[in-house]
Length: 165
Image (cartoon, rainbow, N blue to C red; front, side, top):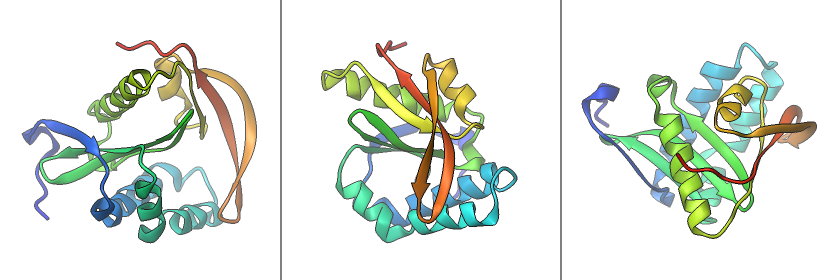
């Protein structure tokens, strides 16, 4: 796969396809390795690796509600939504800090509003919470999210009403 410099082309957002699953898995695990290794123990990182194996990503994509952001022919980000909750949101570290996460979140919110919804929920790790606060999400509590053998302490966040920029 060709690897362009992130600024060389305009990003595109499209529904994720089953054929994207291996690349989505690689993207998510690169993001986890880069952004979370210093904040979580090895068993937590292992649970992410189990939970985002390509065959499990394929199952998630088949449900619908997943969008990818591509730069040239490389996937830079993924967001997964099941009404009313964002289930996953990852940007590849090579594309971090360039506004692609904002583009993907705004796209997803536009889709959700177009479907007649006015509320979005999510659980966020503490490191990502400031990103969501910037877009109007409110921190409404904490919860333990058991996943693939590890209990993650997450922030419960809500955006209601959805305000599009």
